[in-house]
Image (tube, rainbow, N blue to C red; front, side, top):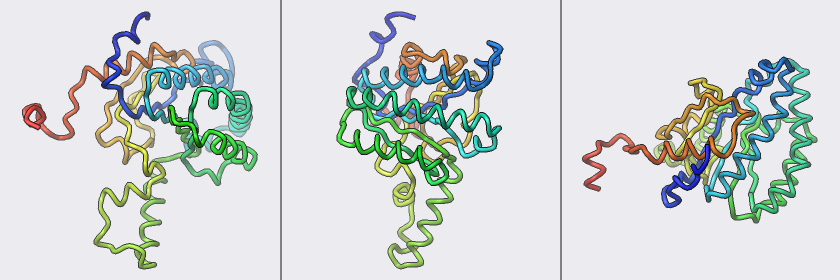
Length: 249
């Protein structure tokens, strides 16, 4: 795959791309190795996606790194993932700063080990003034949990008299989500050939374009990102309207 970047219309880039990084375990199994070997090699794919998005000028990139359901995996795998997370944060912080990338994290952060939360907060603070790509990492995240959490906070504010029940609409609800202030993804990529959303950004992807790649995540490179963007740019986004209505707007 060569020359794909030149086929991208830089004036029509998706502002926000979200990626479900799937296939680490199968990639490792195909090589007769433990699942963590796949996770380790998936770090290279993360670097490629972040660099590729930043170089193109994409404003937001959200990576689904660890779901709330992932806590049900074998403890050995969870421990290895947490160790890998710490080592990756340590090794990549200076690169994020150098490349003008701002880091944000969404999810049930309180459920993560304290050492990881501390590291993440340090990087979030150190990159807070960067104004290039915003990298959003979803950790201990689940969309149903996020929506229920938002509903609970709204209920508390209604009871406390901070908002009126009649004021609740889609705009207000969005402000209570973890992605408040961040535009909804325009493009969602899932690797490994699976055709599922897996409890990821269910509210935010109401009108997101989906792109499913057969590539296992450790093999994902910039060219795969370019392919997804080129496919996205070939589509007509109607948001419930007809083509004729769009042409009249």
